[in-house]
Image (cartoon, rainbow, N blue to C red; front, side):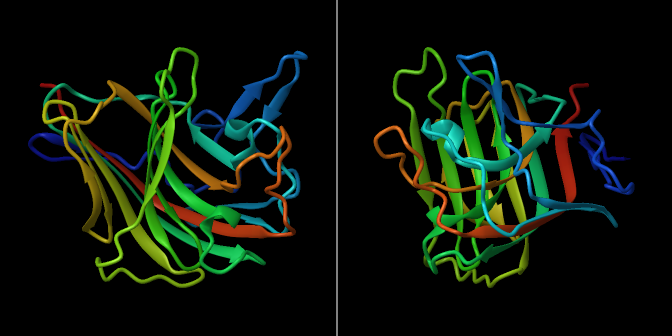
Length: 245
């Protein structure tokens, strides 16, 4: 952890061991009406931890559900810690991520993508950066949590940014939030790809790594399993939050 005059910049997890640190990470889990739960973890995922990275390879998706919000995340873990965003100053969350679709449809990110998640699990705000084998895009979302009147999912790319990617290519993804300015900025390799002014910026967020599909549920049944899979890797997770003092 390094400290400058007004910014704390810790690496939340250096992934130095061989197992996921369950004191720092947990999988997203949805309680179901029958008392069971749906865990967003692919049962046949090949997971590796070490050398500073968390990586997952899923040869063929298996996780699915008839409820859209549960069907989308095939494999999603997030921090056990919620990071408090100060009232003044910009907070930045960054990671290096690579992504590669396995038997996915070219240029159709709905078949599968990796995401760096910055999310508010209290009020349902989501600020993600995502990549498939051939596209990079931002996601701004309001999840259909109880009490949310108008949920939405917006995927936005920047066609004139000059950003290019290919299967397995690594990029630096950053999301910056400022409660006082009411702004959110999504950046890739230091270049803004999307931003919002007058944003609803939550008081705290958690960070996640995930693999998703986005095929609309039909007649209460998932149609997201098409024989495809995904491979992704995350490393150098950095959290920069202004000191409160």
